[in-house]
Image 1 (cartoon, rainbow, N blue to C red):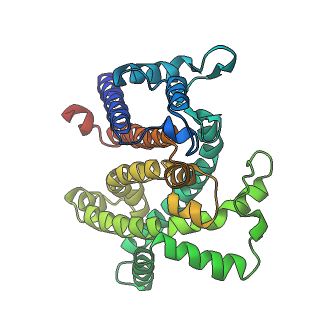
Image 2 (cartoon, helix red, strand yellow):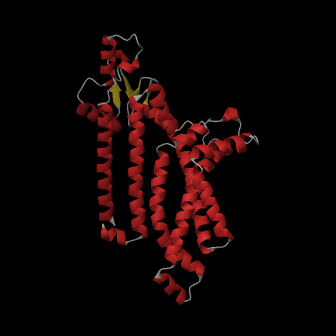
Image 3 (tube, helix red, strand yellow):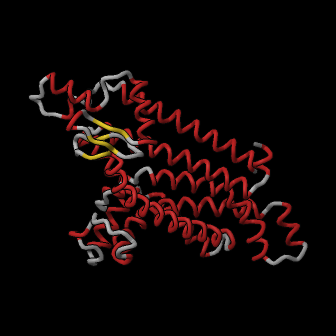
Length: 334
């Protein structure tokens, strides 16, 4: 297991390094001058050149990347003399449009996205897996038909449609959300009730689509595993259905679900853009969209892009470890 874990960690580190280099290189060759974007239309060439020096863009790309990596570990200084300032590690850069370190912007937005992702993840996994197991065990009965109807509704409604319907016809119509408080971040440590009220409808919006997908996937997996020879052997030995389901069926059926769940959760950590936009949540998704559409803030775009890619890569690592724990054959094959 230790050798398997060491190989996966090495591969993860290599992939994150290649991703960061690729993203950094792409942004470096864009036909835009970040230094020129830091001042108005009347900006003189001398001011642009001074801004380029302050941003560290007056050196080759490989030197810029080296400074970027060093800043992630040890922080980074910008400017000279009295105008010098520092962004502490991990330093993703400095946003001259907002006059803040990008790390500060990310640190403010990440708890919002994390709350949204974790709550939606728990909700859709509980509903999807539970309903899928129920539908498989009550095959062709009313429970199965109800689960099928739920799957059809959930997969037919895009997130932006279901979110708007929930917001307009449930939350606002029955005064379950104060429009003036929408988008106000409250830490669960300070006020758990206000935090829950702020996120319950975004959680439902995100979980609806995913829960429908997991219901269908879990039902198919449980039905397929239940027809295997070793399940029939377990029944022939006299084991009851609850024990067979817990010890044999679920262990095999949940293995592919772990893979799917890890990648879906990582995608949400990158920023649930549509849901954050509908409910005015100041998370990573809204931060990214604002940086692209309003500010053209390259350091912020670069940071959120690398973070989103890193979440997916790290989630793959965790999924591989869980998969190896669930099915020891994976460790041998790898």
